[in-house]
Image (cartoon, rainbow, N blue to C red; front, top):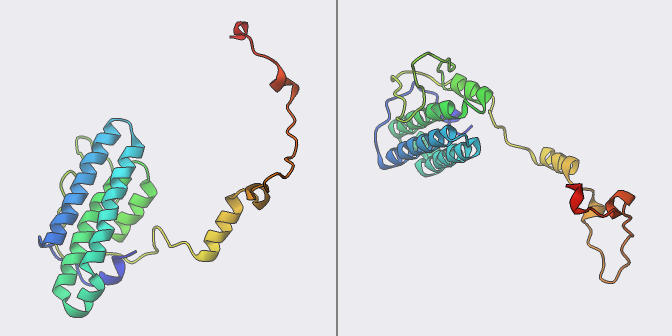
Length: 193
């Protein structure tokens, strides 16, 4: 969502400024940590590592400020877009085992082929992918669209507990009786096990 508005020109080769080095390092670190976690059959830990890497990519966007570069420095904008495209290509591989549809949509918007298994080839991005310059990103709908306030309120209302359950009882107010079923009153003895 944050990259496509600035990606109107063909992709350049990213140069290695300090912000780009930081982004590349965070991406490769996320890939290594996620690979170890997947290898240990811990998809939750793998996703935590991937989300940490994606958070670093968001920090990169905030610090690189492509909206300013678009106005003041088109060459810098080209570097920002290329660095993000490179990182997002790596993340598209990382999320593929657990979110294949998201990976496919991301790769489509990056203008690259869907992942297809190839015997004997490991696609895992332990190093950043190298894209030839000149490729273009493909505009599309946001993969993770923002949740509008009304839609968020409707979801909360749908899944939240009824408000009367959430109201605290006044001090000293009589509590409604709790009736136990006969099965709950039966004693369990050692011989029941």
